[in-house]
Amino acid sequence: MKEKKKSDVAVLLDYAGSRKKLTFLGLTFSAVSMLLSMVPYICIWLAARDLIAAAPDWTRAESVTGYGWIAFAFAFAGIALYFAGLMCTHLAAFRTASNIRKQGVAHVMKAPLGYFDANASGLIRGRLDAAAADTETLLAHNLADIVGTIVLFLAMVILMFLFDWRMGLSCLLAAVISVLSMAAMMGGKNANFMAQYQAALDRMNKAGTEYVRGIPVVKIFQQTVYSFKAFQASIDEYSYFAGHYNSHVCSKPQSVNLTFTEGAFIFLVPAALFLAPDALSEGNFSGFITDFVFYGVFSAIISTALARIMFASSGIMLAGAALGRINKVMEAPTLESPADPRMPRDNRIEFKDVSFTYDGSETPALSHVSFTARPGQTIALVGPSGGGKTTAASLIPRFWDVSSGSVEIGSVDVKQIDPHMLMEQVAFVFQNTRLFKASILDNVRAARPEASREQVMEALIAAQCQDILDKLPKGLDTVIGTEGTYLSGGEQQRIALARAILKNAPIVILDEATAFADPENEVLIQKAFSALTKGRTVIMIAHRLSTVVEADQIIVLDKGRIAEQGTHEELTAAGGLYARMWADYNRAVQWKISSEKEAE
Ligand code: ADP
Image (cartoon, rainbow, N blue to C red; front, side):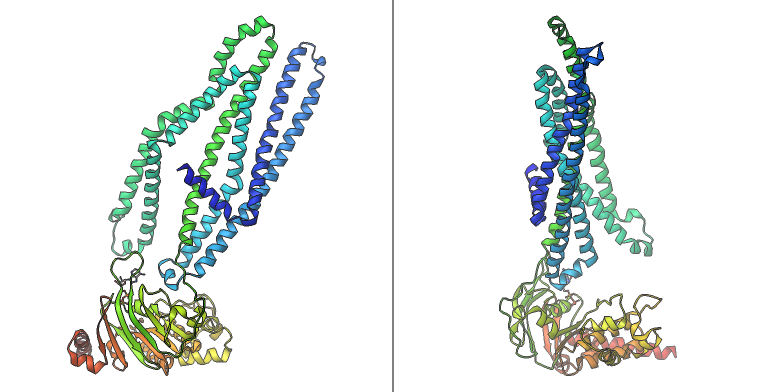
């Protein structure tokens, strides 16, 4: 466990790049400053010795002023060096944090688009940003404190034995008992318990987040907190571990630890009583008293030093956890860019024996799917929910890469096409297409930044957005989401379609699902669809069968496999899954029409 923590720090230091050396310099400064800060104590000892020797004729102790100045100079130098050290560690820590952010963002930029579905970009940013900030306390402060304090501690031990080893030993005995009781608290089978305790804390935090996310559901269904059993169970589990940790693991060792750190002189007094008669008979009683005072003061520093090491060590644990979160971001899959990119020959799309399984899923979302869309054709993907339609469509712009088989555009595997080129070839409008909090102009222009205002306007008109522009206060320049300008789902979809139209890509991937609830939008969206798809190769995820009748080819996907494929006529005649879906659809339409008539 100790080794793992060590490597965490090493990994973090690597992020500092060229400033890694500054960390070491800072740590050295900190260690030296601790040594310097001990000199004043020695001066006190020397001054006390001279004063006692001179007593009662104090004026004879002439060197005391000199010791005072030396003490002052060393204390000052110690503080100055400590600040210089902190400056170095801060410079390195800031570079580490900024490199973590830069490298994390650079890595995530190479992740396939699908990754962002499961990991909202805000979450990634939060994870990376917060974790980078968490490493700062360790690298800028804690490490310097740990190294400095360890050096201080060792120097103190040496000094103690230098003056009078017997009193030194008695002071050290208390420190050893403290350390042993701390080790008992954290090591052995309790180390395992500590891991369980941490895991329980993590589970509770996760369940808490889930609970907060689920609040809308709780409100709608009038559930109480107890309905979130997982959350309740995780709290119970945590409280068991926290209680057990306090009462069974910590209480005794911590009492011993505190007793001996706070009362570090506990063995000093008996040792002094034992040594006093000898000192008296040797006639060196004043020296003996000086030593005793010195050890009394010094033993108090031991407890401060130990507490400091313990406190700073928690920084290592925190940074270890932060590193875990950073690694999660860094482990995000990346899209391999082709070393030798090839140009697609035309706009034909071909699925060749494609299978795909999502990470962490056991059943494939697509198995052995093959079909071809010739240039200019419209292919409709239909089938029950969960059949694999969205997955199939997402493989074309490489939201994900196939598990086996290949997806080709113009006879070139999409993996062999330069990613920028691929994005230029394909326009897609998926259900969750988002608009930025920017002007309508900028939102549409995102597809083609060099487009003129007029071209944006043309695309918006082709996407039937005239009515949206008319009602907005600043027309094309209205910023979405401000000044009360909120667009309905259907309206947002039309703006997204304008964006795709402006892109003017030869391949269009479309999910026709929209808030079709309002009929006005439906008509407009249908018109926008035709403007977008004219003369292009289209893959359309169709939910309403009326829109697929015209398709050149219908692929029926069920449980990730192609159940049927053909034209509308062929499939209705075949009497399979599509024919049944078509019959159901017609029944539903009939029912709707007749109920509307009755209502009249
Ligand atoms: P459809 O679009 O036909 O409704 P999908 O392609 O969305 O179907 O889903 C196909 C299968 O893949 C389903 O079983 C679904 O649960 C699963 N799936 C979809 N998206 C993900 C994802 N991001 N991670 C894991 N499984 C997924």
